[in-house]
Image (tube, rainbow, N blue to C red; front, side):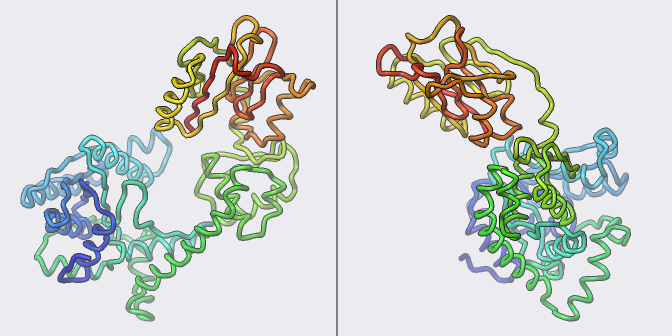
Length: 449
């Protein structure tokens, strides 16, 4: 650990020493927390060996006050000799167009600006000034609102780093005073109309009377809860991926709730409260076919014994792609590559694609058994494949192998003029179609998901 003179310095240096980056982009609002973060990052950039830049977002919300903040950030960065990028949005207009709240929209576009700037400037770390006090406020809000998962603010996620998450707001203010640093105040922070401000002004002072280090206590509790939750999540994840309703309903309660939350996240639905999870549990316990439930960001339904996203149940239409040697793009963005007979080329192609795609399935086909034109197409009603001497229903094969309903419309069937040759999703061949070491062609299905 790099020695530092104060607790704030030690917290910053210890975190960055444990999570080194070659370049940092500081999210700079001009408020006390972000000014301290920028000052720390500037003081230690040579010692810790990273390139440093900052970004300020003008949300177009607070009029002259927002213009003042932008001017302050420019002046501060000039004094510290730190390159600054300023991004401006009309958040009220965007929120209206997207039918979303101002705060939610501002956060969305702020993180979008940070990500785009970091990518453009080749900076591999985005640092934000969240503190232990912010974390405590977040936990209290989650408890009050009955959020199903209680995680607080993560210290790091993807490229985002929060090196001051163990530092309280009181310590931030002490640091400002020690170095005589100016900062700006958002006038909306004084209003108790916002839930977070109400907790900050009314609840936290009472908690500090009971325990002057209340933020530390909350931080430790969240860290322990996360360790427990991570372990339980690992046990629940396999059931979440399969989505089998009976299996989900039979899990012990701590695993069942986590599996349901994970299943919904897999379907693109998040932000569930305890009420939502309780209702999901009842839905799975009843297991009524075609039953559905509206949730934040979408709806789920029970189809073929699986919990699926309802919006994916509508008919996406028939599709068919004639296959040619080389790469063939399919409607969902996956690629079906027809390589030919050279085994070395197959291995080289697979090795290259593994850097891009999450799922690779390859097959060898006996060219002598292929009749007419080879195509990849969607499953059609009543579709069957001759396998094991029997004509098997493709729908039943998908159900037996637990292929999610949402993926079936784009799961390709490789066919010739005589019907289905190969089903990549489940690795099923038509009798006689699998390669036999003579007169073979190779197909590789590359799916990013």
